[in-house]
Image (cartoon, rainbow, N blue to C red; front, top):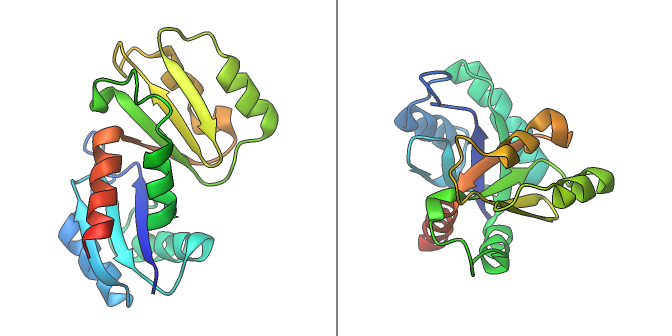
Amino acid sequence: MPRQVVLLRGINVGGHNRVGMAPLRDLLTGLGHEHVRTLLQSGNVVLTSKATGTELERSLELAIAGELGVEPRIVVRTVDELAAVVQRDPFGDVADQPKLYQVSFLSEPLAPAVARELEAADVAPERVAVHGREIYAWHPGGVQRSPLVKLLADKRLGVAATARNWNTVTKLLELARAD
């Protein structure tokens, strides 16, 4: 069975959509997924499952809503897909603070016009790069006051997105490869 990285969007943020990691692990294990592990409290799960991609995303969204009472959007990547994200690292030469370097994982690729508009945005010194179903964003001045963050909203992008900082991305890959 393939190893999957499951990213829940919008849980445990500012006291909203509270989901305990132990109940989440129990739920996922009860659904028949194996080697279920979580990272941090922000909806990062690594598991082994027969289901993949969209099928896994939708089944987990339904189960979490039904059992835990929250309705997070879920994005799934295989271990190989996550490894490719880390290997690609378009800003590794300038992103010297991993917590300010983010990857937005998208539910599907951006429309070409949206991707072009995003990459052409004048947000210097911030930088952005679109690659398939990921958007890499370097926020040297911080995320809170970032003009680029405003451009990365779901409504603007036209697809669901969930962001993780570079520390979390690399730790998830380590966790996924550990089992």
